[in-house]
Length: 184
Image 1 (cartoon, rainbow, N blue to C red):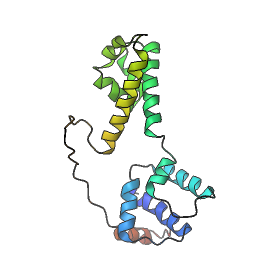
Image 2: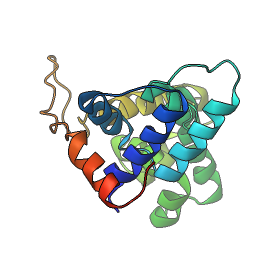
Image 3: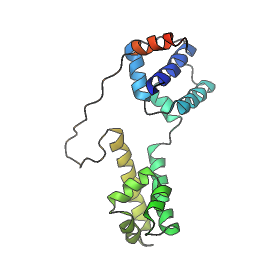
Image 4: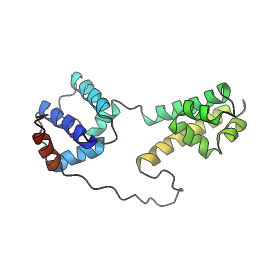
């Protein structure tokens, strides 16, 4: 099954649970907003949402995503801490080991700092606090650039959004769902 179909099944079930009727357009937007969430994680978020007595209405996608993702500043702090830990534990010659330990966000920070060896050489006891703060801020900036689809682009003075992919009609997915005999 495709990812959009799996996500739509979960959203349909949640809509039924909260007795919410969604139009095809609303459904397409929900699926588009949740497309970067693994269906297993989405189900976990749905369960958590339903178990909280304060939640008595159908949730927005951002609310579900927030339940399974760390906030940007925490992810950025973690990336910066992992870079610092890798410097002391791994050293500056084992790039691949450092990359695996640090993770994707941290490694993007490292690349923008001139690479692994330069990152290791540039940190001292005197500047450690300042550099960690700079890495955290850079990490948040990279998260935001990634979210906007601007990774790898040089900074500009003017915001130029990328062309987004069009929304898929939910009616086709609904027909697929009915044809499969699965009444989500």
